[in-house]
Amino acid sequence: MEIQTLLKVISLLLQYPEAEIKSVDWQMEFVPIDEPELFENMNAFGEYFQRTPLVQLQENYVHTFDFNDKTNLYLTYSKLGDEKERGQALAELKEIYAFAGFELDSTELPDYLPLLLEFVSHADRKIREDLLRRFREAIVNTQQMLEEKESPYSNLFKGLLIIIDHFILKEVLL
Image (cartoon, rainbow, N blue to C red; front, side):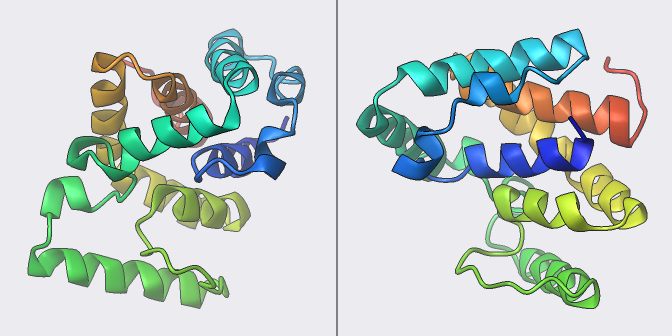
């Protein structure tokens, strides 16, 4: 499975769970992953997603991402909060999207992780590397909080970090 495809899949799985996303057999989608640790994390999340009823998925999603400042999906929020610098960072992201020809047809802010992942799944290599490097720390922090809470989303974030470190930035996980 191509890295860009995996980024798009993670983008979809990090959005509010809807019936059409729930209907996909995600475990079968992950079969082509030939990196064992990445496959293990993605498959663990796929198993959770498959066996959990939609209403429960939705409740867990809201509880995990919407009602918790430490695990929300807005990458600049954990570092900048509602400070003026956050507005500047959001404006800069919008410019990057516009420059690359990516239309923001979403009501979400440009630092919303699923939106960013969708963008980098289509962006050229340099933009993808720059943005994922820039937001890696926020992704790590969220993953750690999710792991502390024993959230199944921790596996999805671990998978994302493996992709970022091993396939995009080519760094070794510490």
